[in-house]
Image 1 (tube, rainbow, N blue to C red):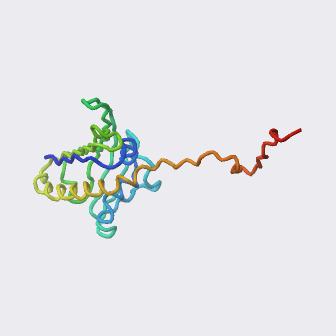
Image 2 (cartoon, rainbow, N blue to C red; image 1 turned 90 degrees about the vertical axis):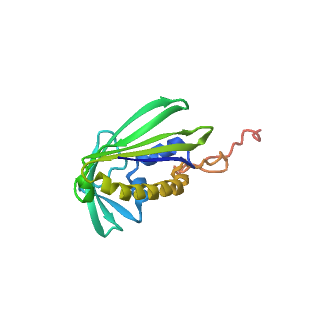
Image 3 (cartoon, rainbow, N blue to C red; image 1 turned 90 degrees about the horizontal axis):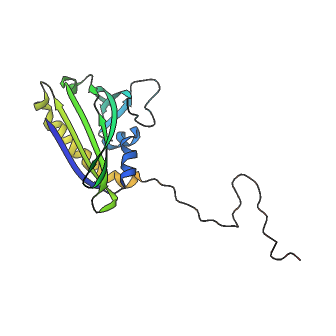
Length: 189
């Protein structure tokens, strides 16, 4: 069974690509409804890395345990008629809780510049589930994915975090503590 999303979001594709690699951004997508917590002493990585297996615990509002799962990351890049499409894939598997009855969990997010507007991102999200309870769990996951779509739209503008540049100003002294002397060569005798 499949759940599909197709959105144009208000950030560039590079910012969206950084966000799908950020455990913090992923946790914020589900918050405050769901909380994502690490099951290893080292905590969550600063970024999901291809080949990594990260066990996590999900809980409703941070109080009621929902289950644990392993997030297994891979990525690839393909071309379509509009150019490069980067694909982030979580092919981990739920370990405990209601989702553990699934024997297929394949979540892929395809990120590319929006056609006609490279300042925006075309976000395609596909979840494929299978197993004896997939039919019963599909409505719950579909509803969760609609919540996820709304959160992605709302959060996307915050993902662009390019630092603002400060224009060169000869009156500003360097932060290293050294002083800059004014250029007196124009007035020297």
